[in-house]
Amino acid sequence: MNIKNSITLRSFKKYHPRQIAKFVKGFFNGRIFIVGLGRLRVVEGKVVAYQHQKTEKNILIAVSEINQIINELSQPRPAAV
Image (cartoon, rainbow, N blue to C red; front, side):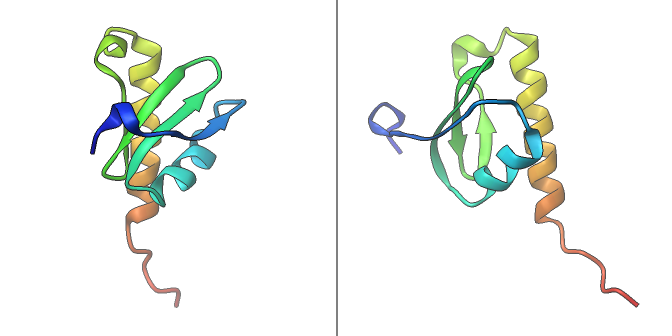
């Protein structure tokens, strides 16, 4: 996918990792914007920071947190007894 030609899928006014994860899980590639963090890429259903953002610790923590929630949402739930 050519990221330069992709459009921003959605802007989030606040950082709510579970809400962002639910949105990202449904998309394969594109971009999102989070106020306070900036623009992030969505690659194969995961959030990825741009190369110039990889030195900013708060962005890496947010990306990791969102991807962890995506993994939790993707896990099959055990059947209720």
